[in-house]
Image (cartoon, rainbow, N blue to C red):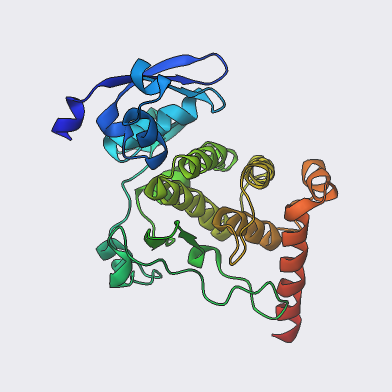
Length: 294
């Protein structure tokens, strides 16, 4: 990282207002997409400018924060209790990615196979993906986020880490505040080919949805989940050989909470048709079929 700090500085223009952010080329080159600019011979390479105007400023900031520190903080205003009394905390500081040992110690997690620990290993896709009506739905905590070919596949778990404790301390109406910002980081990470960041953001969304699935969320959170579904399905593409991980996570949660999601926003989203309506319909049929057969 010391050599990265000595590398040339690029100006990044983010958002429609072209807010300028500065970053070292040695840090930006972690992204294969940005590496083509910082190490290329393009006009922007020579002027040291990167345009990310189509992405929200805060989302770009989160990505840069992760590139430098390995984590990012989302802006959330909450009252958290402490040993000495109440204190106001601004932001939820996501913990660093869970290690293999932490996953092994989780009460539910499955250890990661050794062959997927290192970057460059062969990818393991979810087995036997067939959109049939016979297989039971994958539990939320077992849904995996797979990277592109040659990248590791990580599995999240509903372990009660620091983030879960923070969620328990929040009022129910605040539980879903981080869902959409994390999804936006996920989508930008996909564009920048930052597979570890994509998985990192996925885990955060998964942790919140697993927590909400164990403890009934409030109406404010359910509305935010509708917003999450709308964004995810408009910003990600369907895959050929497997379900897109975040689509699968969101649609599975929606099916499990289908009766509670009787909001006009949800009804309008279903009425629009498209992949979301198809995925939810398929999963509902599978869900009820397994209940009837069980």
